[in-house]
Amino acid sequence: MEAIAFYLFSIITIGMFLIVVFSKNALYAMSALAGGMIVISGFFFLLDADFLGVVQIIVYTGAVMALYAFGMMFFDTTKDVKENIKETKIIYGLWIAAGILIIVMVSAPFISDKLMLDASISHYTVIGANNPQAVGIFLFTKYLVQFELAAVMLLVAMIAGIILVSKKMDVSLTTTIDQEVEKEEFHQKDAK
Amino acid sequence: MITLTHYLVLSAILFSIGLVGVIRRKNLLLLFFSTEIMLNAVNIGFAAISKFYGDLTGQMFSFFIIAVAASEVAVGLGLLVLWYKRNGTIDLESMQEMKG
Image (cartoon, rainbow over all chains, first blue to last red; front, side):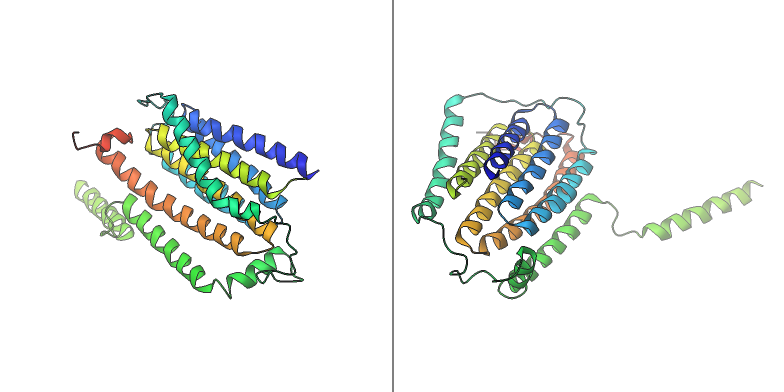
């Protein structure tokens, strides 16, 4: 059962992400990316990381992809993306090799370790708690500082996004509208 | 039986797809998509190692990666909108100002 789910999800994800990389239409690429993100959350549920799966759906497909969708309203996405792509197979081959090499280098120690460890041996799990509880306990004890830093970083990113996109931040929007309305009323009285 | 190796191979494949996208794409928005693919591939690897080690640290790192990705999108998209307003294009080659 796990094998069926794994292979099904793998095929869907790889297909979706290939569409993202090779599609000419930005809208198709974005939709495929959103679909791929949802399927990736399936992997997290398979891996007993329930909370991570839910966060994946909420943050990636809910927030990040929605942000991309809003961002794409600024750009013309109905046209096909014109890109000056030089297709050189050797370069792609080399890059794929480089990517696989990096991951082999990082993951070889884990594989050679013959991992089927007993969860009760490890120090970094909470015994007798389900996944969200354990994540909560970890996040608010061992990783509290990182958690707070991530919160500050998100706040900074939010403010930066607002400042970058909006114009006339030095003018209050509500008061200007009131003044304009008053001005118009004044002009109307004048006309009478 | 699905082992850790399966998940790591999948992670490698997805990471390579993202890497090819980063090399191939010239449109900055689609370049961002490719980086998201790479971040997600790494997340799968972390979650798999976390499960097979019985160690929650991998999942914690995945959470922080997701937080970084979310803030990256917010700032990056803001900069992209600014660039589009100024230059009317989000092509990567429009940023090439040095002649070489």
